[in-house]
Image (cartoon, rainbow, N blue to C red; front, side):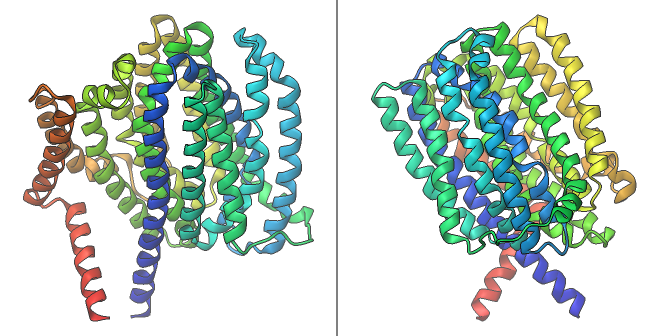
Length: 489
């Protein structure tokens, strides 16, 4: 009875924190989505392309901010204030050094792209590195103690205020600076809010030996993350260097909307499930069950959304971005297909890290990135669309590679995982086919999109009910139990 009660409590904690984490991600992304519509209408693709060039540099340096120590703090079973404080001081010093390097090397970025205005933009945007260093440990503390409700409020407040800043500056004619100001104010305000509402503060203590132990786990994650980030941004660097800024803007804009939704769902699940997995790292059967439920649940939600966006893509772009952004439609559809299988990547890697096997994690990243770089240089000569298609091919191969270790670690093979999500994929494809064929049912794009959304939701729910989809039944059963429990109180 006690074991059953503990399992019920674990599920309740996971679901409650997932809801808050999802609300935080979804709320922030919803605001940013609305803001991006306004900004895309005001600003030109060239403005977006200019900022994208330096965001690449910022993203790469952001990897060093965490250094893998945040996840090491979450994974360590007995982490205390000495661990958190020691990592905090290391982070701050390291981030100041990183920013100094970027500040003085900003002219080199301008020379590489042959755009003198990038020097000032780089120096201002990369202030986010120092802010992220302050924020990082607070975020790790929230994840470890599962206080995602507080994270929700900090993120939402920062996102809303930064949205006002970005739109105001765009309307005032600041161009690319509006995008920089929005990013900087978003991170700065949300970080300040975290310090206000989270009680943890660094203590006047430091242990080099503790940092050393955490680094033994964290450095492999840092190298893995660095490889992944450089690889992920390599396409943008190549497109920005060898093609036009507009090509880069269309590529990024096509990725933006499916990426926002896929990352929102996966980060919400992974952000909650990783700390819980870490607590259950000794119980392989329970850990396998968590991975399985994570993959099924995320795919049940994500697959219909991605296929729905791909099917309704032309109406979405026409309404939200205007026809000047229509060249991004092929990229949007390619990325939608890629992100359908994102949960397999996320759940398998989280399970590997939860078991403390960052060595395997690093090896997987190296194999995938060597393969990916080969595909990038092959596709480079055939245009930006070929680069995107190459990314799709690597994504499919990557999910097989990520799932491979859990064939032995958890006795949960890639084939078993595909069988688990196949019903969700089939239902989503059936729904997407119907949505696609009603794209031009009227002469009004807004009405067409509204009809597509309503029909897509209804068709997916009805098909799930008729086929007795396992994840759908799980949701309904959990909802019924929750309602009964609330009524009983």
